[in-house]
Length: 253
Length: 248
Ligand SMILES: Nc1ncnc2c1ncn2[C@@H]1O[C@H](COP(=O)(O)OP(=O)(O)OP(=O)(O)O)[C@@H](O)[C@H]1O
Ligand SMILES: [Mg+2]
Image (cartoon, rainbow over all chains, first blue to last red; front, side, top):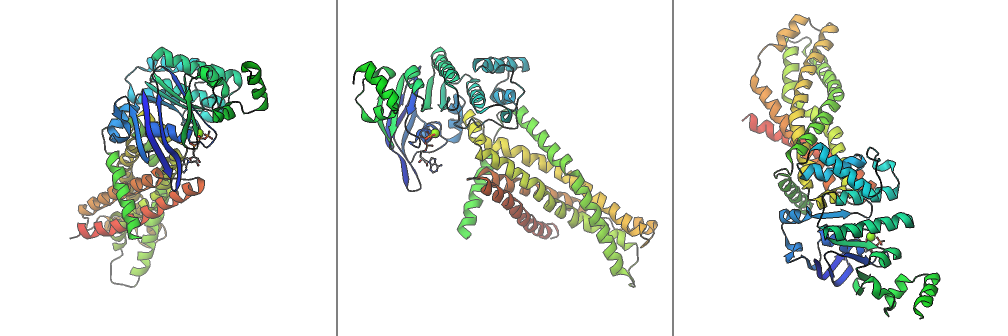
């Protein structure tokens, strides 16, 4: 379980997060939603220590992550997998080398064991056979999936995904959502996902946090979305007239 | 200006402090060090050789001109070419050039990784990036650059031979007699000290410039330029300091 307690974060003079408290639960896919620029990526980076909060705490269980020394932080990070919004694949390495990198760095597995693990991860993101391509040679959506494969290769306890399905078609998008959801439940890990995607919200939203203007505007699960009265949530989820009509038909309001 | 200098110096020390830790995985560091040795060493052979030939040739030709009509024996040309290249020209000029070639490359490589979030991605995996990205480069350079400098000195002396003997300034017997006169092994020691220090400076300063890059391609270009400029300044400064210390 990860808790963000009264997190504030400013860049220069602008305060992006203004005292945010929320909990990401274990064994669940925790979603962070919010408009573009709401601070989702910033929150995710605070959680993994790539940014330091101006004030407030990030707690991993009972450990105050924000106050750890670099070395202790690294120990926790070995249990973290993260997918970056821009994938952040190492572009002078092949797909296989990218996914193998954490294995090379942190395990003593044999060549064969590593290759098996890499191929297993590639299979899970439906990219089998793309081992020797370079990131520049595959599509944006495929890069995302390679990024996911790399983030799960070490069987992390905490998985962070920054918009795992932006740039994917609806079908692949769904597959990726299901994959992340399955892994979360199989391994009983804490997963945090930033997303804009309404399908994801309705499919895998075990615990949803809506960010608005630096604060937590709403928290709940996918079953609570439909009959929530929260205006911000409504505005965000049922953004198009089409969806508003659908909702009217379904719930009657 | 002074505060700015202190800020960078402090941050540089902090970066080096975190670079000096036990590797996560020795074999990965070893592999990276080997790759860097190849890049820096083999990759710089041609340019270093080319420069060295001309250093020797120019030194020989100019001293021959200065010694004309003097009472200094002609074989002194060989002696002067040997000592000036070993003590000063081979280590300094080679490393100034390598700061341009290797230093800018290091700054651009690390800076690019910073901008494309590769460094962040590695950090999240638990890799000590300060160490993994910098240590192998510094070590590789400190092994390979002294070799290059040594080679440069040898080639320079040969360049001096070609320029002075082939053009008939002196005979080959005289040149070789000069090269073999008054030899001080201590000068070779000085050459290696300089090469080691310069190698360290040009890699660590360039890595520092790249590691803290922000912004976009303009800043990356600036970092790469600054890597060369600061390395060059520091190399010349330390050249002077080493000269003072080692001749005391
Ligand atoms: N390093 C930074 N320096 C200054 N401002 C920043 C920095 N990173 C983010 N911001 C600001 O913080 C705000 C939130 O950015 P963030 O990237 O978290 O948005 P987001 O919710 O992830 O948006 P999107 O859905 O478009 O990815 C933005 O206004 C952005 O300008
Ligand atoms: Mg974002």
